[in-house]
Structures are given as structure tokens and as C-alpha cells.
Picture 1 (cartoon, rainbow, N blue to C red):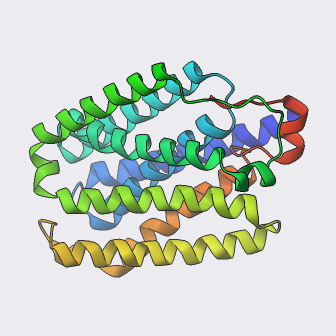
Picture 2 (cartoon, rainbow, N blue to C red; picture 1 turned 180 degrees about the horizontal axis):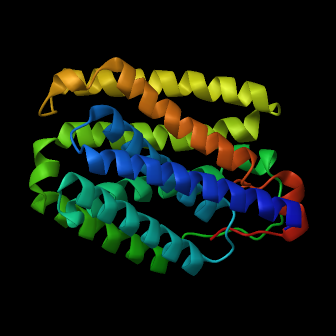
Amino acid sequence: MKNSSSVIIWLLLAATLAVDAVAIYGLYQNPMAPNAGVLFESLCFSQLSIVAIWSVFTTRRMAVAAVALACAIGVAAATYGWLQDIHPLEMLAFFGTNVTLIVILLWIFKHTKWWQRAIPRPAQTWQFSVGHLLVLMTVVAVLITLFRRGDVLQTIQFAVASDIVTNCCLALATALIWTTIARTPIRLILLVVVAALVGLAGWASTEWFAALTNPADNNLLRSVAGSLIQVILLVAWTELGGIIPRTADSEATGATSP
């Protein structure tokens, strides 16, 4: 990677961590503040999606991807559990399920003809082996167990399911649009539209099932704002951070699937 690209990535990482620090401080000062909660949750979801996208599309080794994903999930679960006074294992189940589904969807997308046309690469591709299947089954079994033992997750299970689905949709939409549209402004506009629609759908589903302890706080504006925050970070890291390899990069480095 060129020095200029490395500098941009480090600056982007520093900016992301600075925003995280502001969100954590705001939520620590007032754990019940709805706006601070939306900001922090959106930052958690978007950064987990960023790590998942990078792990599937960029890193060459599955071990590196697994460590990166595990660390990201662990940090998010521990921080969120501490700020919201929720057992970290419950948040581990929540964020773990979210990331697992995103990774599976992106792996499937990576082996479609659409991806192969958009990002032509050498013939070496990651294949789903029996070992990977056993690891995945183990992870899913652990997550299901944690879900069943989580009092908070059981109480707001429909809201949890809605959040996971919307986050997966945003991550997959980012990959689809990035590999389809050539111009950055058009990509950004399309992702903003998708974010607004996903936020609307998330709000509608939560209101429909009435799963939150205080549904009045889950208004449409906050739901859409949360999706937009995720899109902003995803766009920044796809456009500047290179978490999805460009055609020239793929052919030059010969990057393979994790």
C-alpha cells in the first residue's frame, strides 16, 4: 500500500476513534439520553460492519479475519454493556449474531457472478469447507444459547431482530452499490436513500410489534438518523479506507478470500 493511502487510513481511524470517544463520553454522562444512545449504537453497528466487510473482501488470511472480528465484537459488547448496564454476554450474543449474518451474506455475494464481473480477480477463491461449516455451527450454537439466557434480549426480541436485519441490509447494500455504480456522488445519494428506507422500515417494524420498553422514544427521525450515521461511516471507509478492493488493487495484489 502506498504511503499516502496509509496516511489516509490512519487519519480515518483516528477520526473514527475520536467520534467514538465523544459518543462514549456523552452516553456515560447521561445513559438515558436517547440521542446519545442512537449515536453510540449506530457507531457500534457501522464499525462492526466495516470490520466484517474488510474481513471478507480484503484480508488474505481467515485467522486474521477471525481475530479482528472477535476483537471488534468483544470491545463493542463490553463497552455497550458497561454504558447501558447490560450483561456483556447478552451484548456479545447481539453483536455476534449481527456480524455473523453480515459475514455470511457478504461471503455469498462474493461468490456471485455479479461480484466476479465487478471485481475481476485471480482464480484463487475461498471455498466453504467442512471445517468452516463446523466452526460456523459452533458459533451459531453458542450465540443461540446466549440469546436464550439473555433477559434483556428476550424482552425486546423483536427490536433486536429488526436492528440485526436493518444492519445486514445496510452492509450488503454498501457492497452492492459500491461494485455497481462508478461515480462516488451517485453512490452516496443511493446509499442515503437506502438508509432512509431502512430507517423507515426499522421504525415501522418496531412500532408494529411494540417491542420496546418505551416505544414513544423510538421515533422515525432517530431511526432514520441511525441508518444515516452508519452509511456515513461505511462510505468513508469504502471510499477512503479501501475495505472493498478496487479492480486494479485486486489484480495487483492477488488478494484472496479469507
